[in-house]
Amino acid sequence: MRLPARGACLGAAGVALLLATAGTAAAEVADPAAALRARYEALAERLARSPFGQPLLLDSEEQPHALVGDVYAIVDHPLGTVASALTRPPEWCEALILHINVKFCRAHAPPMPPGLSVAIGRKVDQPLAEAFQVEFRLTATTARDYLGVSLAADKGPLGTKNYRIDVEGTAVSATRTFLHLRYAYQFGLEGRLALETYLATTGSGKVGFTRVDSGSDPARYVTGLRGAVERNTMRYFLTLDAYLGSRAAPPPQRFEDGLARWYAASERYARQLHELERGDYYAIKRREYARQQSP
Image (cartoon, rainbow, N blue to C red; front, side, top):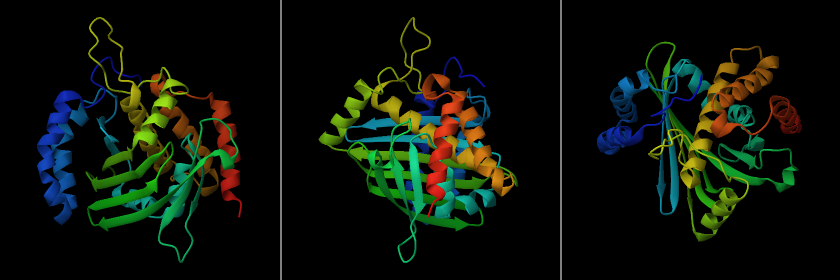
Protein backbone atom coordinates (compact mmCIF):
# COMPACT_ATOMS: atom_id res chain seq x y z
CA MET A 1 0.00 0.00 0.00
CA ARG A 2 1.37 3.40 -0.97
CA LEU A 3 0.56 6.79 0.38
CA PRO A 4 -2.09 8.56 -1.68
CA ALA A 5 -1.32 11.65 -3.64
CA ARG A 6 -3.71 13.82 -1.65
CA GLY A 7 -6.01 13.78 1.35
CA ALA A 8 -4.40 11.03 3.42
CA CYS A 9 -5.64 12.66 6.61
CA LEU A 10 -8.95 14.09 7.67
CA GLY A 11 -8.14 17.52 6.27
CA ALA A 12 -10.39 20.57 6.62
CA ALA A 13 -13.59 18.73 5.77
CA GLY A 14 -12.73 15.96 8.21
CA VAL A 15 -11.94 18.41 10.98
CA ALA A 16 -15.27 20.13 10.38
CA LEU A 17 -16.99 16.76 10.59
CA LEU A 18 -15.27 15.97 13.87
CA LEU A 19 -16.21 19.38 15.25
CA ALA A 20 -19.79 18.72 14.23
CA THR A 21 -19.78 15.52 16.26
CA ALA A 22 -17.96 17.12 19.19
CA GLY A 23 -21.31 18.21 20.54
CA THR A 24 -21.67 14.66 21.84
CA ALA A 25 -18.98 15.30 24.47
CA ALA A 26 -21.54 15.57 27.24
CA ALA A 27 -23.13 12.34 26.07
CA GLU A 28 -19.76 10.59 26.18
CA VAL A 29 -19.82 10.79 29.97
CA ALA A 30 -23.28 9.30 30.24
CA ASP A 31 -23.09 6.90 27.29
CA PRO A 32 -19.63 6.59 25.71
CA ALA A 33 -20.74 3.64 23.56
CA ALA A 34 -23.47 5.73 21.93
CA ALA A 35 -21.07 8.63 21.40
CA LEU A 36 -18.46 6.42 19.74
CA ARG A 37 -21.12 4.77 17.59
CA ALA A 38 -22.25 8.24 16.47
CA ARG A 39 -18.64 9.09 15.61
CA TYR A 40 -18.38 5.90 13.55
CA GLU A 41 -21.58 6.66 11.66
CA ALA A 42 -20.39 10.20 10.96
CA LEU A 43 -17.08 8.95 9.58
CA ALA A 44 -18.21 5.73 7.90
CA GLU A 45 -18.30 7.15 4.37
CA ARG A 46 -14.87 8.73 4.68
CA LEU A 47 -13.46 5.54 6.17
CA ALA A 48 -14.82 3.55 3.22
CA ARG A 49 -12.99 5.76 0.73
CA SER A 50 -9.90 6.53 2.79
CA PRO A 51 -6.90 7.22 0.55
CA PHE A 52 -4.74 5.25 3.01
CA GLY A 53 -5.94 2.12 1.21
CA GLN A 54 -7.62 0.86 4.37
CA PRO A 55 -10.43 2.25 6.55
CA LEU A 56 -8.24 4.69 8.47
CA LEU A 57 -8.24 8.44 9.08
CA LEU A 58 -5.66 10.53 10.91
CA ASP A 59 -5.89 14.03 12.34
CA SER A 60 -3.67 16.22 14.48
CA GLU A 61 -3.83 19.50 16.31
CA GLU A 62 -1.09 21.78 17.62
CA GLN A 63 -2.22 23.92 20.54
CA PRO A 64 -0.07 26.55 22.32
CA HIS A 65 0.99 24.08 25.02
CA ALA A 66 -0.22 20.69 23.74
CA LEU A 67 -0.19 18.28 20.82
CA VAL A 68 -2.96 15.85 19.96
CA GLY A 69 -3.10 13.09 17.37
CA ASP A 70 -6.14 10.96 16.54
CA VAL A 71 -6.50 7.80 14.47
CA TYR A 72 -9.91 6.42 13.55
CA ALA A 73 -9.85 2.99 11.97
CA ILE A 74 -11.75 -0.22 11.43
CA VAL A 75 -9.63 -3.23 12.39
CA ASP A 76 -10.23 -6.86 11.53
CA HIS A 77 -10.49 -8.04 15.11
CA PRO A 78 -13.63 -8.73 17.18
CA LEU A 79 -14.29 -6.30 20.02
CA GLY A 80 -13.88 -9.12 22.53
CA THR A 81 -10.39 -9.86 21.22
CA VAL A 82 -9.44 -6.19 21.43
CA ALA A 83 -10.82 -5.88 24.95
CA SER A 84 -9.09 -9.00 26.24
CA ALA A 85 -5.74 -7.64 25.02
CA LEU A 86 -5.99 -3.97 25.91
CA THR A 87 -7.43 -4.21 29.42
CA ARG A 88 -4.50 -6.27 30.76
CA PRO A 89 -1.26 -4.44 31.61
CA PRO A 90 1.04 -7.41 30.77
CA GLU A 91 -0.46 -7.60 27.29
CA TRP A 92 0.11 -3.89 26.79
CA CYS A 93 3.78 -4.57 27.46
CA GLU A 94 3.79 -7.38 24.89
CA ALA A 95 2.36 -4.89 22.41
CA LEU A 96 4.38 -1.78 23.24
CA ILE A 97 7.77 -3.47 22.93
CA LEU A 98 7.11 -3.66 19.18
CA HIS A 99 7.19 0.16 19.02
CA ILE A 100 10.54 1.38 17.78
CA ASN A 101 10.89 3.90 20.64
CA VAL A 102 9.85 1.58 23.47
CA LYS A 103 12.92 -0.01 25.03
CA PHE A 104 11.30 -1.81 27.98
CA CYS A 105 7.90 -2.31 29.60
CA ARG A 106 6.90 -3.90 32.89
CA ALA A 107 3.38 -4.17 34.32
CA HIS A 108 2.99 -2.89 37.86
CA ALA A 109 2.81 -5.66 40.44
CA PRO A 110 0.19 -5.75 43.21
CA PRO A 111 -0.54 -4.01 45.49
CA MET A 112 0.17 -1.17 43.06
CA PRO A 113 -2.82 -0.05 40.98
CA PRO A 114 -2.90 -1.29 37.36
CA GLY A 115 -0.24 0.41 35.30
CA LEU A 116 2.98 0.15 33.33
CA SER A 117 6.58 1.27 33.71
CA VAL A 118 7.71 2.06 30.17
CA ALA A 119 11.18 3.12 29.02
CA ILE A 120 11.03 5.36 25.94
CA GLY A 121 14.21 6.13 24.08
CA ARG A 122 15.95 6.53 20.76
CA LYS A 123 15.21 4.44 17.69
CA VAL A 124 18.59 2.72 17.89
CA ASP A 125 20.15 0.33 20.38
CA GLN A 126 20.89 2.12 23.64
CA PRO A 127 21.45 1.30 27.31
CA LEU A 128 18.26 1.21 29.32
CA ALA A 129 19.70 3.79 31.74
CA GLU A 130 19.68 6.36 28.91
CA ALA A 131 15.95 5.95 28.19
CA PHE A 132 13.21 8.00 29.85
CA GLN A 133 10.95 6.07 32.21
CA VAL A 134 7.24 6.82 31.98
CA GLU A 135 4.88 5.62 34.70
CA PHE A 136 1.46 4.99 33.20
CA ARG A 137 -1.76 4.46 35.13
CA LEU A 138 -4.14 2.13 33.30
CA THR A 139 -7.89 2.47 33.56
CA ALA A 140 -10.39 0.46 31.54
CA THR A 141 -14.13 0.45 30.95
CA THR A 142 -15.83 -2.45 29.19
CA ALA A 143 -19.44 -3.08 28.22
CA ARG A 144 -21.25 -5.32 25.79
CA ASP A 145 -20.56 -3.03 22.84
CA TYR A 146 -17.86 -0.66 24.13
CA LEU A 147 -14.25 -0.59 25.26
CA GLY A 148 -12.44 2.38 26.74
CA VAL A 149 -8.81 2.21 27.90
CA SER A 150 -6.56 5.03 29.07
CA LEU A 151 -2.83 5.08 29.76
CA ALA A 152 -2.02 8.31 31.59
CA ALA A 153 1.30 9.58 32.96
CA ASP A 154 2.12 12.81 34.75
CA LYS A 155 5.47 13.13 32.96
CA GLY A 156 6.68 12.06 29.52
CA PRO A 157 9.94 12.27 27.55
CA LEU A 158 11.50 15.54 26.38
CA GLY A 159 9.96 17.58 29.18
CA THR A 160 6.37 16.71 28.30
CA LYS A 161 3.57 16.21 30.84
CA ASN A 162 0.05 14.76 30.99
CA TYR A 163 1.22 12.10 28.56
CA ARG A 164 -1.73 9.98 27.35
CA ILE A 165 -2.65 7.12 25.09
CA ASP A 166 -6.42 6.60 24.98
CA VAL A 167 -8.19 3.86 23.02
CA GLU A 168 -11.92 3.41 22.45
CA GLY A 169 -13.60 0.64 20.52
CA THR A 170 -17.05 -0.49 19.45
CA ALA A 171 -18.09 -3.47 17.35
CA VAL A 172 -19.19 -2.80 13.77
CA SER A 173 -19.66 -6.52 13.04
CA ALA A 174 -18.90 -9.86 14.66
CA THR A 175 -15.34 -9.70 13.37
CA ARG A 176 -14.53 -5.98 13.05
CA THR A 177 -14.06 -3.13 15.52
CA PHE A 178 -14.10 0.63 15.09
CA LEU A 179 -11.13 2.03 17.03
CA HIS A 180 -10.31 5.56 18.08
CA LEU A 181 -6.76 6.06 19.35
CA ARG A 182 -5.72 9.40 20.79
CA TYR A 183 -2.09 10.24 21.57
CA ALA A 184 -1.59 13.53 23.39
CA TYR A 185 0.73 15.43 25.68
CA GLN A 186 1.30 18.90 27.07
CA PHE A 187 4.49 20.90 27.43
CA GLY A 188 5.80 24.08 29.01
CA LEU A 189 8.67 26.26 27.88
CA GLU A 190 11.29 23.63 28.81
CA GLY A 191 9.40 20.94 26.98
CA ARG A 192 8.91 23.09 23.87
CA LEU A 193 12.64 23.89 23.76
CA ALA A 194 13.48 20.18 24.06
CA LEU A 195 11.01 19.28 21.31
CA GLU A 196 12.30 22.04 19.04
CA THR A 197 15.88 20.93 19.65
CA TYR A 198 14.91 17.40 18.59
CA LEU A 199 13.20 18.73 15.47
CA ALA A 200 16.26 20.79 14.58
CA THR A 201 18.63 17.83 14.97
CA THR A 202 17.51 14.20 14.99
CA GLY A 203 14.04 15.07 13.73
CA SER A 204 15.25 17.39 10.99
CA GLY A 205 13.67 16.68 7.61
CA LYS A 206 10.97 14.42 9.00
CA VAL A 207 7.35 14.90 7.94
CA GLY A 208 3.87 13.87 9.00
CA PHE A 209 0.91 12.64 6.99
CA THR A 210 -1.19 15.75 6.42
CA ARG A 211 -0.78 17.34 3.02
CA VAL A 212 0.17 21.01 2.97
CA ASP A 213 -1.14 23.29 0.24
CA SER A 214 2.15 24.20 -1.38
CA GLY A 215 1.23 25.34 -4.86
CA SER A 216 3.47 23.60 -7.37
CA ASP A 217 4.79 21.01 -4.88
CA PRO A 218 2.26 18.14 -4.78
CA ALA A 219 4.15 16.04 -2.24
CA ARG A 220 4.67 18.39 0.69
CA TYR A 221 3.65 17.20 4.14
CA VAL A 222 3.25 18.92 7.47
CA THR A 223 6.50 19.19 9.45
CA GLY A 224 7.49 20.40 12.90
CA LEU A 225 5.51 19.50 16.00
CA ARG A 226 2.41 18.40 14.11
CA GLY A 227 4.49 16.14 11.92
CA ALA A 228 6.06 14.61 15.02
CA VAL A 229 2.76 13.92 16.77
CA GLU A 230 1.30 12.43 13.59
CA ARG A 231 4.21 10.03 13.20
CA ASN A 232 3.98 8.77 16.75
CA THR A 233 0.19 8.55 16.71
CA MET A 234 0.43 6.33 13.64
CA ARG A 235 3.20 4.25 15.24
CA TYR A 236 1.08 3.56 18.30
CA PHE A 237 -1.87 2.55 16.14
CA LEU A 238 0.30 0.23 14.04
CA THR A 239 1.75 -1.22 17.24
CA LEU A 240 -1.65 -2.17 18.61
CA ASP A 241 -2.88 -3.48 15.26
CA ALA A 242 0.27 -5.59 14.79
CA TYR A 243 -0.03 -7.05 18.28
CA LEU A 244 -3.72 -7.83 17.87
CA GLY A 245 -2.95 -9.63 14.62
CA SER A 246 -0.12 -11.59 16.20
CA ARG A 247 -2.39 -13.05 18.88
CA ALA A 248 -3.76 -15.48 16.30
CA ALA A 249 -0.33 -17.15 16.16
CA PRO A 250 0.73 -19.84 18.66
CA PRO A 251 2.16 -18.18 21.81
CA PRO A 252 5.80 -19.08 21.08
CA GLN A 253 5.54 -17.37 17.68
CA ARG A 254 3.60 -14.25 18.64
CA PHE A 255 6.54 -11.95 19.26
CA GLU A 256 8.21 -12.76 15.94
CA ASP A 257 4.87 -12.47 14.15
CA GLY A 258 4.32 -9.09 15.79
CA LEU A 259 7.76 -7.89 14.65
CA ALA A 260 6.98 -8.87 11.06
CA ARG A 261 3.59 -7.18 11.15
CA TRP A 262 4.89 -3.97 12.74
CA TYR A 263 7.80 -3.57 10.37
CA ALA A 264 5.74 -4.32 7.27
CA ALA A 265 3.01 -1.89 8.36
CA SER A 266 5.45 0.93 9.13
CA GLU A 267 7.27 0.46 5.82
CA ARG A 268 4.02 1.13 3.96
CA TYR A 269 4.59 4.70 5.09
CA ALA A 270 8.35 4.78 4.65
CA ARG A 271 8.39 8.51 3.83
CA GLN A 272 7.20 9.20 7.37
CA LEU A 273 8.18 6.16 9.44
CA HIS A 274 11.28 4.46 8.05
CA GLU A 275 14.11 4.50 10.57
CA LEU A 276 15.92 1.14 10.47
CA GLU A 277 16.51 -1.65 8.03
CA ARG A 278 14.56 -4.80 8.77
CA GLY A 279 17.50 -6.76 10.17
CA ASP A 280 18.53 -3.93 12.48
CA TYR A 281 14.97 -3.50 13.79
CA TYR A 282 14.64 -7.24 14.43
CA ALA A 283 18.02 -7.48 16.17
CA ILE A 284 17.37 -4.52 18.47
CA LYS A 285 13.86 -5.65 19.34
CA ARG A 286 14.94 -9.22 20.09
CA ARG A 287 17.52 -7.95 22.56
CA GLU A 288 15.01 -5.59 24.15
CA TYR A 289 12.35 -8.30 24.38
CA ALA A 290 14.81 -10.70 26.01
CA ARG A 291 15.68 -7.99 28.55
CA GLN A 292 11.99 -7.37 29.17
CA GLN A 293 11.36 -11.08 29.81
CA SER A 294 14.10 -11.33 32.41
CA PRO A 295 13.03 -11.27 36.12
